Length: 284
Length: 141
Image: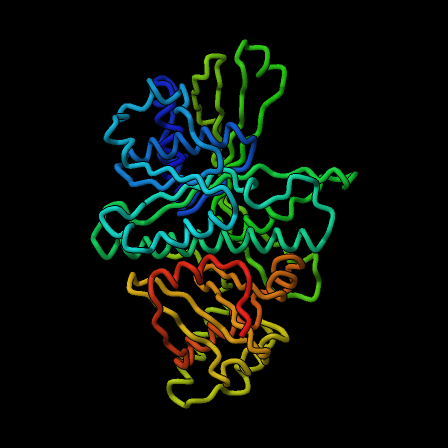
């Protein structure tokens, strides 16, 4: 599903910058079906909405968008910049607002039932704000609670991936051009205030990384050059695919051998009036 | 191509087991040793579950499938194999938390049952399937 995110970035790239974007640089990250957007809540949500609208209007995909908080209006950036945005396209997006983790599981688990059979099977599933469903509001210090949160994260992630695989088979069986079924989720890491010294590890994020093929990291650029240009915010966006090779070993330290694939890097310029512009940053 | 969560050595091992079991209805010692080497202590426990025919593939009219494994104590666990999840304590602790194992014995039993062709089959309704997939706790019998 890096193709959807890349489509979002290209759609909101200025004409001058678009000429510099060649497909060779974009193919640095291998095509993947699932992505996890990690970063600040409001921006992730906007990115996911952009992905939903772009997928529905530009690619004609049916989208199933799940989030805890009702969406009141579409981001300003969408109105003038997505060429194919029409009411008919918006009808391809079904919004669902499960309030709890259990309700979310039921909604995803039920996607196979007859009401979602072709031609209404979604080809893109989006879950916004996983931390709202998975993490307790207070910092988690109990190891038992951490294990429980990890287990919930694994159950939800596995259910999402398994469901996307099933819907891919359904789409392919019916000869749909929209296969495979893609998956995008967002997660804002929790900061454990009890841990000091080195950066604390988010145990839920560790689990999520097992299931999603690509991570899209949003990192605000607070350097002088970025803040001095009169723009409201500048963000660095990193798309990286990780193939985890987990081998059994006696040593725990040898466990985490992640082979990182090349990174695709973008910069997002957010103006004071909410308009967004993406620029391809560099090749790796 | 599906994103694989198994290292290639494990995938190849299951293919080899499938082939030799089809021909001889047995798993030779060298493959048992390889299983134990790759998966650790849960290998023998998983083989015990396979011997007891503990793995069932559930399918519903929509075409959706999932696996249930009956553990030694009679508890059943609904597992995902396309992307590895089991609600048992060993998966939560050894695999997720400690990162010290690839699979729990239930997931390994599913792979072995499939390779050996000894998975039980059971039909459920679409609604029952939704309930099974979304239930957060294991089922006690």
